[in-house]
Image (cartoon, rainbow, N blue to C red):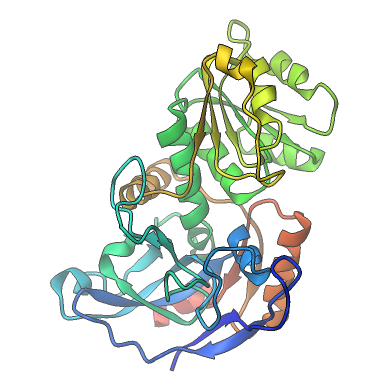
Length: 362
């Protein structure tokens, strides 16, 4: 029976509790006609996994493997021809289900079901195997390692929808600001927008993270802890276009007020998270400039396909902050959660379940 890691219930109120990790046994894989069994080679954390341990995420449950991000090798299939064609291939998993291709949102009456740790989906990637519909797979881009591929799905999909679908500003010559650089989504947003030809600028409270972002293609960066940072940003913008066309934001807070000062009329703010506050004022100054504020979540199955294809064609590589090895390495895995708690990471936090040189033996 395959092994996985889930959270164990202990007493405590949401936000105060911190559920410990525990090993659980999964049923022996019995793939149905159109299903495959994926041996997970690497899996990656997202902030939702920390929220699950704190009981701050909808549908938090116990006994369901954690994590939504994973890469692996198809080791068994059901009897269907579509499933069988995947045998032996290296793959990345679509991190959610219930959303095919509608630009507005999930079509499923029961909503979008993300992998890992909730009542809405019994599957997760922090385990030896996942039995999943073959239709939820994409081939792992050949230029990526297993660890890099595992770092791609959820943050890549979220960034793709925010930058490419919702903002409409990832075009040559356009100016984009990506806030809070260092997190997985923000970094993928930087890579996508820069690869599409936009002038990308970033903000962070860390000078080190700003320097690293410039090395990845950012045209400039500002420290949001500095008073009047928005004026400094305007000074960095290209001559003849001293305004932003869009902002990709994961913090919320005062971003609309700032955006109203430095966005062009009709500019766009795409918000995929609110780490600063669950509320965000929409000001009359933004109304008068016709500024759109658009919420953005993960994305559809089609957007996942498009995102992986773009990564493959542009030879993009997700940024990995730190990796630990082994499903039995609970101390190491817990240390990745501590990185996320402190916000010290620059890029994704990944667990390598099978060493790269052992993949061919699966």
